[in-house]
Length: 340
Picture 1 (cartoon, rainbow, N blue to C red):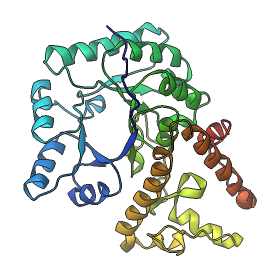
Picture 2: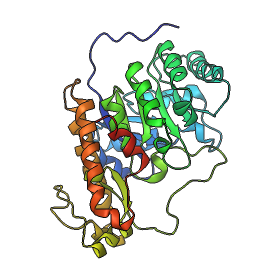
Picture 3: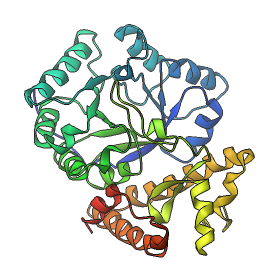
Picture 4: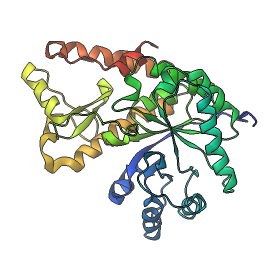
């Protein structure tokens, strides 16, 4: 197979990664991103319905077959459904690539997914590869080499019970891949996708709920705050997600968190403890992520890495005032900030 040889500099982009059951959110999200990525087999049908009502948004579809949710449609049918619905890119059903002590296992899995695409006649489709985080931390060079050898851009989903990029070496592994492999797309990711774009990825698709910011390896429990059901909010100046309940607690230390984005106008984020404001909380998250991603995407290709590293460095300093509450920057942010 031949290596990818890009003929021109491509401006990267970003989307929101959404479930198909929220057409209202799909319509809102595409006004703040280049496109939307919709998870699940019902995505094309939902978009066809939206298009009949006059919607013209850019869209991609992740069948998420790597989750093994049930018998998927035939691969030929899946490709055709995406085309009929006007997909920006055609994506394969997806394959889970588990951890292995044999680095050659990665090449076998990728070649099997590419062969499945080619047998179906879907030569323009990108392979969707859901990776156990060990492929970033232990075998990033292997991943980069294999993805360079295939003749199409790959779409990667990162696998972990919580934050895949929190594991030591994962950020550096992702940077090695995005710097070395043209056209890599990052699906179903958190704010770390902005870092991926800064270091060369062509697209990042941000999940608005915890389960859409990574994939949980089969048979593994998902992490998260099971005793706190309050809205999860992206706090832009800290480059991380916090629950409204936790943010409300900061006020007890006389460090109330307000949001100066247009969507909030300086109002406190603790107001999202009110469940009646769930739609406004979603809107805040989209605005915050959109502003962050747009700032990096719209920068010159030689400036993106420096600007993102500076944002991470500034975000680290934001935690100083919360030190008395034992709130510290997460390992992912610390890893990105080392590149400042």
